[in-house]
Image 1 (cartoon, protein in one colour):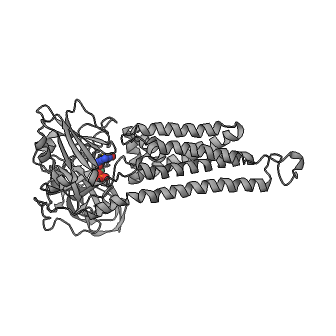
Image 2 (tube, helix red, strand yellow):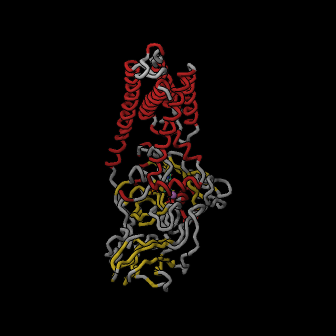
Length: 518
Ligand SMILES: Nc1nc2c(c(=O)[nH]1)N[C@H]1C(S)=C(S)[C@@H](COP(=O)(O)O)O[C@H]1N2
Ligand SMILES: [Mo]
């Protein structure tokens, strides 16, 4: 690539930075979820089939969003460099391309579930600002020095004289710097949701009318490295489709219960807080959790039993599903019976004694013991439609996942860590096992081709929570394979049949290799 083309490409990228910076800042001020990145990323997430979600989580874990944003940034810079090249070669083509991209993303923003009347504005602004910047830079793109003037061994025939090259780079660098400054300002302006953060800090959780189960003595085993019985909020896995975490002001929050009901119910935050609260401890798992994976957590939830609210609305006899919707358009389809039976299905406001964090659904989310999150645990929930499975489909069901998602019987080895080398002699094998709302009766461990041996099961907090287990082991030198399986309280033995997460949850025995030094 000769010098001028490199400059033209750099100019395109710089113009794009300016545009994106302007667009993100505008979004931060008028509607956080309408920034060009949020719109493109959100659309990509929604368009992604089941296997893509799985691959993204498998590769990047809970950093999948950062990976996606990085990918978009790289693609955008590449396209912009090409636009810069085109502009240098064929006037106005790059400018038109940027404007068209702005229009396209602006149009896309209107298809988003959380679109407002002005969602198109930030992306359009981004496109037009980039187009304007490109025009300005194109006019400053230096021409190659005439061949006659070039010193043969200093500069090639098509090279740019150093001073005009430098002048262009100053302009392009300045444009890029302004773009980056605007982008930084946008993160600061987004902290304008700091107002809602203060509201959250001021929330005083009511005391539960029905307190949660006590933690029985001995429920937390004294084995270094075992999973904590209660997952601290900061360590609780986060999975959702929201590129920009919704910041919902409780003052404007409302829940509507409608559909196949005798009467519609509407509930404000203040009304919700006045209702008797139940506390319950429940293990929540993501359907994307691999065998041995860590997309699972256990917390004490505080909220109003959903059955109480549904009782007010009086579902019709033909209904069998509740479609819950969040502010950002995510939906989950939950079997009606799991929301009306005696389990503690909650409209939750508290997690481990604190108001929900924004990431985990502030101000209000659902938690249904026994069901994977994708069919039950709607965060930032604002709408419950009583309906039927043959009439409504939820977000992940549309993308190939099973309509129903009871959490499967699972067990995991925490200690020793997979692949670890340990010293021969006495040691402990330990981990956790769960099947929320069924409960775990036993865990068995097998070393190499040996017999299945019963582990010691710690007392469970309840059938809705995971349980810790451990087994002493006298390890002899060599390489070993350790596997575990759980037995549920209904007698089911955890299957060794290997299944991937899609469409309704992974199965198989967690199996780890260890090396024992003699
Ligand atoms: N609004 C909203 N709620 C959602 C989701 C989502 O994408 N959007 N994902 C669900 C899924 S797939 C899971 S596993 C749980 C995870 O809850 P957590 O992030 O609090 O652990 O939230 C559920 N609730
Ligand atoms: Mo999930």
